Image (cartoon, rainbow, N blue to C red):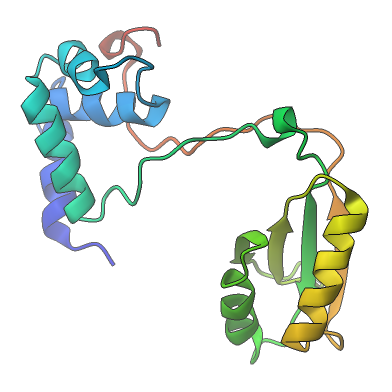
Length: 183
């Protein structure tokens, strides 16, 4: 849970209602690191900061848990990983937390989250994603998972994706188009 202090510090610029180097930095980070030998320096130049300020700011945001991780968004379909299954589960409410936590620990599960049921047509309340190269392999992994975790009695369906229309990371920074280069 985030405390009020880090969020207040992050939003200082927005509260002043003025362009802010830190707001710009957050927005630029959401777009990804520049592909250059010195990405922090490039970001610093784009924000009007020194490289050390950028690195210090990112370090502080990580310590404050505003940023969980900096990573790579892999376009897995381009790598041939296109047997992607969304497994939807109708888990009794009293078990959903335990089942969700168990699924989340599995290495083959890449996403796992709970959503409300949409009755009467959609009884499923737990979702997990399994990515693979071949549908048969994904189904075999799922069968092993179901058996090992004792989920055979829980209603579930497997929905393989057919086409990806969009894949990107989240965007949370408030931005004005005139504040960011290339936006």
